[in-house]
Length: 144
Image (cartoon, rainbow, N blue to C red; front, side, top):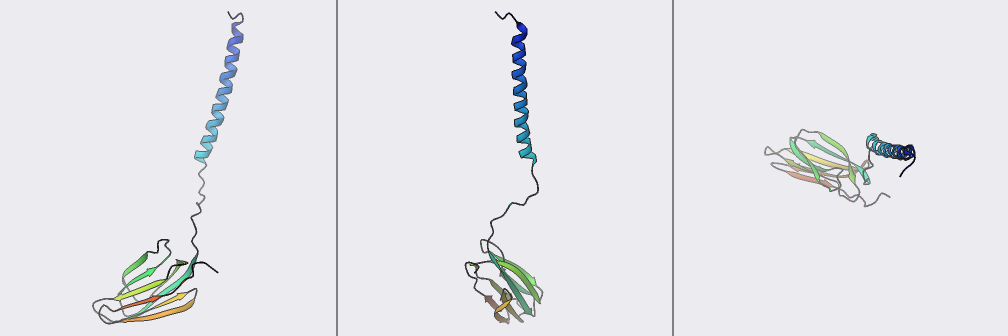
């Protein structure tokens, strides 16, 4: 038998105290990781782009479709746009910047223009009922 009962309980208290300290330390580290949620923006995968300016002039309203920054290359459509209309966007390299216009049933005349990095690339004109025009350009696959 244990001749000194206090000796057995003193060792138990020390073990409990050490376990409590370790538990608190682990809890503090976990809490710090959970609560340390600073508003640091996560770096999104960057896709190199080029500045493209689309412009439509004439008599409208018209429907305008154009390519903007989108990794999947989907187009944005503006229905019933009032003219003149101008939009500067970023287009991923390797995609073909394109703007297409469609006149309404009342017809008229409208022209689209396309500029890549400030340099005029193409102009096209749509005339008459449901007239159509498209301006397109080429962007290299990499930025040189």
